[in-house]
Amino acid sequence: MSLNRIPLAGVIGSPIAHSKSPALHTHWLKTLGIAGHYIPIDVAQEDLEHIVKTLPKMGFVGVNVTVPYKEKVMDFADLVTDRAALIGSANTLIFRKDGKIHADNTDSYGFIQNLRQKAPDWDPKAGPAAILGAGGAARAVIAALVEVGVPEILISNRTKARAEKLKTDFGKRLRVVDWVQAGNMLEEAATVINTTSLGMVGKPPLRVPLDGLQKGTLVTDLVYAPLMTHLLNEANEAGCVTVDGLGMLLHQAVPAFERWFGVRPQVTDETRAAVLR
Image 1 (cartoon, rainbow, N blue to C red):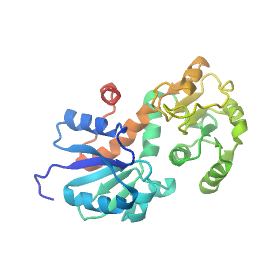
Image 2: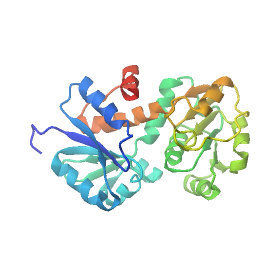
Image 3: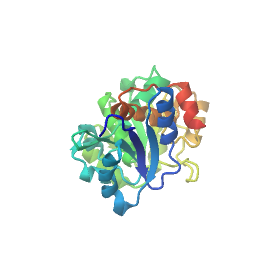
Image 4: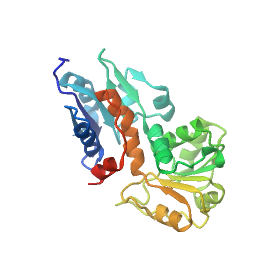
């Protein structure tokens, strides 16, 4: 790549028009005075590998990857980080100068940094965590919770087999709870996380009974449209500490931006405002 070539990055998925990542990275590029661009790229499944391998030749330094390709890109990455391998998906690709494609997953990092910024008194070791959902986001959250020392993780999913698979992959710290009993596991949880899309705009509501939420419990929802979900509103009423899901999106982008553009951005109130606009 020539020295004066403007670095490009972007986000790959399908559909992609709804992504907030372009607003986020463009805000950072502008405020940090970096000559670069970040664009949404809608890719058909049959073109995925060809397009990803062509992007470095066009001046791209890397891309984010979103649904439905976070697992698929692992198949043709040259290097996969340990955490991406553990989570089983990649949300960040770095196109190295030696031509190799480096796959990473920064979702776990983003999840923990969001909690630490918005709930600085949160103690992961205070008691069990209860997770709703068993998809890719749940895998990233479990990896993060295990790393910071949460003693036990209760997990409930509408399809129980998917939760059982997580227990197989992550080990004895996990306990699977039937979906019909999901409300009961909230009573013993010090931390509660919704990793499902239930409650999101255009999706069915989260119908888990929430009367088991205890005062002082940390409750976070990975859904950020709406920003204040039914779960977070109910948790506020119950005297819980609540953290919305937007911060995870903002924080997971920090290490990627730094790898691509060489500067570490900060997540501030202005960052949130720029993305919410």
